[in-house]
Image (cartoon, rainbow, N blue to C red; front, side, top):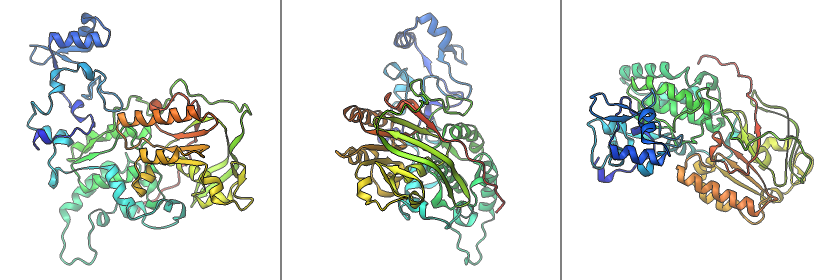
Length: 450
């Protein structure tokens, strides 16, 4: 690809090259040191090392090759003063293998194709419907979706077809990902019933099994919880040996693989102030054979701003569907919304839905509505409850900042409105979201070989 046609994907791949070298001149050392409010001597001692040819200094990097100034959202922490080598790529220089490292330089089509999990999810959702997961007891299972015949669209009636080579590569890739992606736990689940994070894992597995050379896992908030992002970082090295490269959604800063909420979040005591917007009383919910909620209760009051967290598949999106009524199970539960209890009396849908604004990555995939457009629709005059389900999942860092600022401004103007934000990465949340509810991990469903 011509560098003039290059479009940066903000994937950070060029900043994670193993054994990559970023030389720094005296003037660049002075500029970066001043930007970081360090003395030049301190910067040289702590942030640089001697280049392999011993002719200049270069920036230090992490053991895995990632630049120390690459943020979790694939941005440069010293962008205003970054060295010339970083500023001029790829327009003024490229290495012979740059196209294999940078998805933005990869030629379209053929073996060098790059596919994102977002594109794969949109394609899959094109044949489904928004609330399908809450009405789906059967359908194509994950085991069938990831089978050799389905992955490669093999016609069972094909005569003389010999796919021995493809089967060998398929088995190698399956052996590499089955345990790290914990696919056995999902084998029997219908694809349509998967959570957002589970769907991303399955779509990623399918792309890997197909042998797509470059797979863009998504933005920094790409639907996978912190634990799974850390696992992908470990898996990526093994996949490169099989000719598959993952473009990861940012460095996993927490080596323990657990989400740590920012300081402004806390788990408050019930202070009994404010009118109840949502009241959930001791509900027990099963989805198929899975126990999703067991004697679960929660009260959301006027003016409260909650962050809802939990591992992939813990029921976060389902909980939103119980509140909005998108799930038919809402009518079998003791849940009151704006004083109306669907399980005890007939309630016109508009009496509840007209007061709820929703933004979700699912609506983007099924309805084609961008998060920004959804937010415009959600922030209507009558909205009293704002439900945000990983709304920044497919946004760039700049778009996510703008989105969060708009939400924050609207909530400041509507102090009595309540809001719940589902998000794995809490660093983008407005400070007004000061209450945290974490859904406990569910016991694993026994898996079986298929």
